[in-house]
Structure formats: C-alpha cells, structure tokens
Image (cartoon, rainbow, N blue to C red; front, side, top):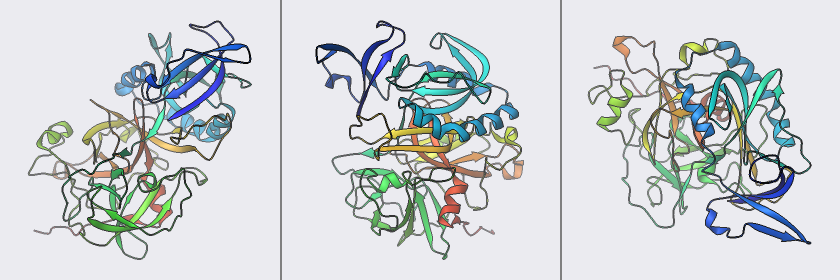
Length: 430
C-alpha cells in the first residue's frame, strides 16, 4: 500500500505552513530519502505507517469501555455521521474514518476529558492537504476531535499452501477461499436463501479483487479449508462496497453449499480457555450455539440501545479464533484504498468507502486479525434466564480493522439485500 499527498504543515517539527510530502506506506524502510527536490524547491517527506499511527485513538478507546451510556448522544452522533460522512470524505482527502466518542483528547492523548464529540481520524495529524479547508470544529452543533487512524480490510494473503483441517460437517468460523486464490477469509454464518437453498455468507473482498472488474453473479467454486481443493460450495451473488447503497455499505457474498451441510450451529476453533473468557455459564457441557435464525439484532431500529450496548460480543475467526469485545457507538464511516498507488486528491475507483458500520473494541486484545474478514459477530443476551444462559444474537459481519477496533457491517441489511434469513437448525428434542 502506497499513497501520497502534498500538504501544509500546521504545527510540529516543520515550520508552520511549510509544504511537505506525506507518504502512507507499509514499511518505512522502502523510503530512504527525507527530502524531495523538484524545480528548485525542497519538500520534507513525512512517512506514516498505516498500521501504526499515534496511540492517541487507542488511549481514548480503552478509556471508554466502562462509561455510562448516553442514549441521546448515541442517536444524535449516529444521525450526524450518517448525514455528513459523504460530504466530509469528499472535502477532505486525508480523512480516513469518522466516528463518535464520549471523550475529547487534548495534547495528543495526554489529557482526556469526558466530552461527547465526533472524531475525525486522519492519515497525518497536523498536516492539511493543499487547497483543502481545515476540519470543521463542530458538526450539527457537536464538537469535533482530530486523531490519527486508518482502516484496512481483514483478509490474509499467502504465497504457499497451508495445511488446515477439512471440517465435516461445516462449522461457522472455518477458513475459506475461492479455488486457486491466495486470499483467505472466514465462513461467516449459515443462511437459507430465498429459494430454500442452504448457504453461507462471507465478505466479497475475500473472494474478489475489488480493484478489478467484478461480476455480481459470477459462479465459481469455494473451498474449505482455504488454499485446498476441497470444494464446499459455489459463489452465486455478491454486493460490492464500490456499489452505492442508500445507507449501509455492503461487502458481502452468498455461497450456496454443494456438500458438507452443517448439522448444528456450533463454532470451530473453540477452546476450553474461551469458555472462561466468555463466561455466562458456558462450558464443554454447555457450548455456545447459534441455532435459532430469528435471533438477530438491528441496532438501527432498536429503541433500547442502552440495555444491550454493553452486552459482551464475540467472534470465531479463521485466523485469530475466539475473541471477546464490546460494541462502541454504533455508527462509523471509514475508507481504504487498494494496494495500488493513489496520487490523486479526488475519489478514484481504487478508493472504497464504508458507511453506516458498527464498531467493536476488543476487551483484552485485538478483536480481529488478517484472515477474519467474513466472521459473524454475536452478542450474549444479558437478559437471558438461568435456563437459557447462552442465548446468542447475531449483529453483523467483520469487514476490516482500524488501528484500535474492528469494523462490522450490520447483519440485517446484508440479509435483506440477499433476500435470505439466518438458518434455523433442527432443535434437539431429547
């Protein structure tokens, strides 16, 4: 990943208003020069590693875990982000994400004060691209805060085959890929299509190179485990993030099963240690199981967000396995770029924006890793009775990571787009 822009340094190491070149790259070692000379002028080079911005965002996100929920700000910030993200991305080429926070950060995270705000995450704090305006200090009357941060899709690319287990029957969380592909993702969850077929959903960017022309209904084989020849299904339909949607961005694919039909809503890669972390009465004798397809949560329509926002979330990903986290304010807009260079200030076909997404913060470690794209996210219902300790609700699908959180597409719009429903497994009557 490489991209660049010329900007004016507003403060910090260089002179105020000095023009600098900002390079966003994977590895700082590939750029050895510190100065770029052109037409008799010298431009200092500022290198930013997109996976390692400043720790300011992480510090604030960690502090928010135990805050009391404010329903009014939750609704106001969600509407503000939803209504203004498109215009803000268009005006500010260095803007990477737009989210909400219960705290404002001052002195680059040294002073964190409780004050609700809209947060602009940019590629290089303190540098404004030429011929662009400063970030607004308020949006719809809500104060703003500026921090560094990036979003990137959570696929994993390899250059040699890996040996993984062939899961039969299939389980949620298994590793998958398209046949002969080097990109791995996660089998998200099982669904019943509009014509009654059983299939599963994963991310479109797991199965397609989005920088190339893609066809929604292209049919090709999907294998499990990834990088194998063990075909489990066929791709039938996809919704791409490059396709405009009225509200929620879709990055999802529907795969219809050809073999290895699942028998229970159990999860792969689950360990005894995971039960302890998740708690809620789970054990080897009381496994977490998602078997009732109508157990979904639509945070866009819920009226009692505060009662469930702190319910523990978890996922089983093909790369990082089980992780636990919590749902932050339920609206975030992000954008990322393909691995090809983008030297333009304007939108290009290589730029992908995600609107109206959810955001998950890991409790004790990162919630997702490269290879977890497509994993479904579940919440444990805190109102479950003692007789029903592990009632699970599906809330969304992982599409990528920021530097301190995970971005999740809400599950209800995905199901509605495909005309599908979560699969209900036959209940054991014994």
